[in-house]
Amino acid sequence: MDMTRDDQTRYTPSGVRLRARVRRPGTLEPLLEGLVLLSTAPNADWLPAFVAMSERHPLPAVATATERYEADPTDANLREIAVCSAAWNFTPASVEAGAELLGRMPYNGAAVAWSDEHFDHIYVSTWFPRQLPMLIVSGGEDRIVTQRLAAFAELAEVLGDDGARS
Image 1 (cartoon, rainbow, N blue to C red):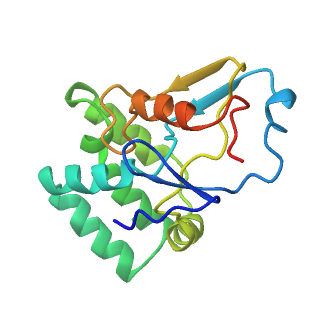
Image 2: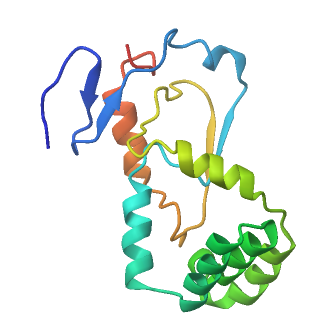
């Protein structure tokens, strides 16, 4: 890892690179009454964890559905990937109900393509609330976007007292 550092780059204690993006720190918090984070993470650490989990717990139906989607990227084929991945999203007792739920949801292949093309693999939040009430909602056994509360605490520690990077 290149440990070269400058005024625009900071690193978390675990070595995650932080990039300065906020031009006017602290401008969001006064506009909010509270903040709900739904199945989110303060950085991209979840992606390698997901890849490793999917390699340890492969779902052949997901691989087949993915091949079908890559050959014919329709919303219906994207839905099939989601339905086949229910075991990664729900506890064993709720996989059947979860698959049924995933099958009823809307899917947008164009949004997925855009997200895939523009995903920031090294992102780290540029702001974290200091005084704002916050609710973090996630699945206790979520195997897609891991919810390490320590990562949120680590981010808060790295940021200054105003909750934003300079």
